[in-house]
Image (tube, rainbow, N blue to C red; front, side, top):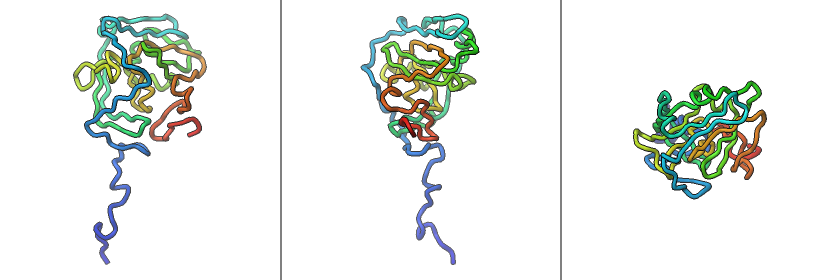
Length: 203
């Protein structure tokens, strides 16, 4: 006997986009603006990025200095802990590897705290920030990154939930231990891997 799809229904494997991690939905053309803080009035001329802590040379780059570094970018998908995912995004800026190569992390450095010009923080293993996995981005789709989405520049760590991609990024402090950031102190998971659904502490 031939069983048609109309009789059995579409299988769950066929319905779900394989690009979606568990518990996520496709946000389509929308990009929700979600922030723990009020969007700052931060001009590009006043923006800077610093790498300090367990490094051979603490370094700070102005907007102009950061733009002299080799350009790099990310094209792919992003995922928010609030359950939306956005496919085929494009961020332009500089690979975080470039900044770290100039600051030269010490062998004892294992983790980092990313901090914003507003004071917001997020913790990340250093291994999640190196090897072409993270960027300092100031463009989205070839346009300047809007302030509500972290402009003039934000951290982009696309393989983790997007609360780790700190808006209005000001710097990275390298440590020899894990130090929870804002959301991690308030019950979120220490790492935040979307494919493992690491949303909250204990997941």
